Length: 219
Image (cartoon, rainbow, N blue to C red; front, top):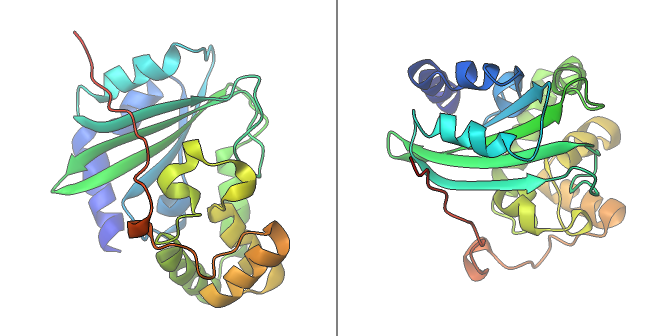
């Protein structure tokens, strides 16, 4: 609930959603919309009528006028194989981070050609319909531990092949479809279904840091 309230303050103070809506139809989805926040991240999908390779840089320039970026990165998936188990065709992914009240927040932006095949609002509504107080508690507890894993795409999704990492979609699937109730069961599920071994993996501190690219606006 604390993160949710902090996110509300950020959205109100910065007008980030309004900026994104100047580019196209925007949807807040993911953990914020599902009330499942366990880390400072906002997932926003933007359907843009004339999305092209220049759009993400124009969008980041607009965002940088209200928040100073600490990290900014673009993954262009136009005509390429998606990095994600749930394929997102003709999309551009943007990782945009900034400091607010001493905490680094991440905007996880998915830019889609208008009327793209994947709909953030439809996907989120499907998750909402399956959430109960118990599954909400289970998912939050698994996510809280998953963030420590070097195999979790949240921290370095742009540099990890889809078969080598898992994402929140895998957690939802494990809980809703296979009845997983804790992190240990989720680790077993990943080994069986995705051949991803979480047992005995290096702690995040033992790994090389992600190769992020710093982004600056030249005016």
